[in-house]
Amino acid sequence: MIVDDSAFVRKVLRELLSASPEIEVVGIARDGLDALEKVYELKPDVLTLDLMMPNLDGLGVLEGLPLEAAPRVIVVSISGTDTELGAAALQAGALDIVRKPTALATDQLYELRDELIRKVKQAAVARPRRFTRALQTPAVTPLSHTHEVIVLGTSTGGPQAITRLLAALPGSLPVPIVIALHIPSGYTEALAARLDAGSALDVREAEDGMQLRPGLAVLARGGAHARIVRRDGRHCIAVDEHQGSATHAPSVNVLFESAAGTFGSGTLGVVLTGMGDDGLLGAGAIHRAGGLVLTEAEHSCVVYGMPRCVAEAGYSASQVSLDEMATEILRFL
Image (cartoon, rainbow, N blue to C red; front, top):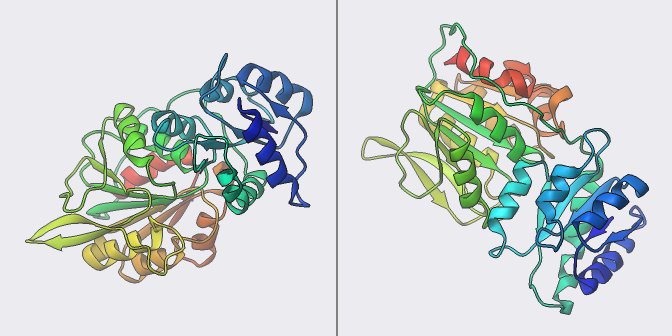
């Protein structure tokens, strides 16, 4: 189902999606209130959701969706004008964002076809989660392992997962965390600010030369790789805006391989929900360096793709649900 207050956008998106034999457009909605009524009537598998609408905006739609059998949501938005709303939507459970090339009613919207169809198909196989309560910071007895850095990789369902995980970790965390999340450019600054507000950790968007320290959580910038390097005797973030051969930027593989090369056995990798196999090569690098990798268990993943690849390759030291991951991380620190 297509939700947008622009008749032209609704027309174009319907044409684009109907071009795929695997997708049926079951309806359209002109605003958020119209959308919620039709969700209960039509029971669509996927919504394409505009964020800025009269009567009820996209966030209101996300909050009003049923707790059970809710449709998967792909935000279709204008980057730059609703970045804050986009970050909030991802935290509220939207699976991905497709950026409109323009706010105007022009044929540029037809450029979205391939990306839109691909992301709608990916959303159709996801299992979105709705969280009704926050986790408490766990009290644990540490194991005898010693780690110096946590590197975390995630994709589909990742914004909601890292929101929940970071909120459960203490501000006194003795090591830094660096996160590679597959997300369009332009949204990570707003998402980092929201994560910071909801966590005892100091959460920042990656900047080149940023020094790592305990209690700091660094979110790789959308559209750029984040590497951990050693400069002048200090561990820092290097931001690389050249995608290279990596399928995604930021790449989980790039981050994990840099951590393994810099910290060796002191690296603790975490792979959460996500589509595809980004992180597999990096998890192998951590494993060979003597570090450890934790993966999210299948039953709590929105998409059990990235964690599955790592676990099946034999690189996962432990597979636990998202709600148990903070406890498991603290045990290994």
